[in-house]
Length: 160
Image (cartoon, rainbow, N blue to C red; front, side, top):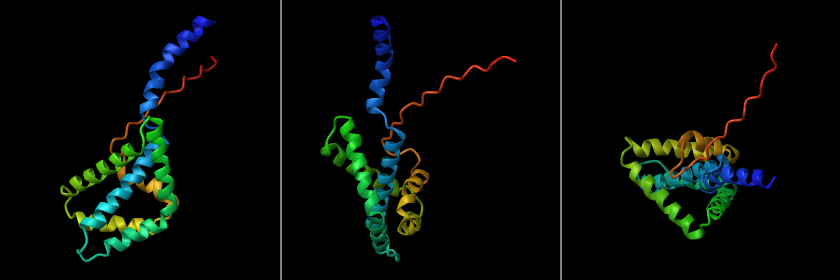
């Protein structure tokens, strides 16, 4: 019996180590939501004075989605805490997101036009739809590392 436990523990150890550093689907969703928020913030700052009220649209998004964004912040803090990192790591991550969004913006044709349309969508978005919107808009989030999916063992069919 003890030998079986040791074998199981040895086989499970690599998975446990990976799970400590990979993102669950909920954690990937939290990263996507935060990335949408940061990209909207960068757009609101970068596209001021282009004719559209980008700051107003961003403010409306923040107002409508305040509770969802606060929940998202708690999820991100929990993600970093699970990895043994604290508030400074969350702050670094947010800075990296902002810098990455700023860099990407210079490679997008009509950045302010595209961003204004996204801000209009976000300003009108029901907060409950934010995770789905973020998943569609972002795909794999910056610095996301999904946990591997373990396929279920197929059940044997009875022979006729």
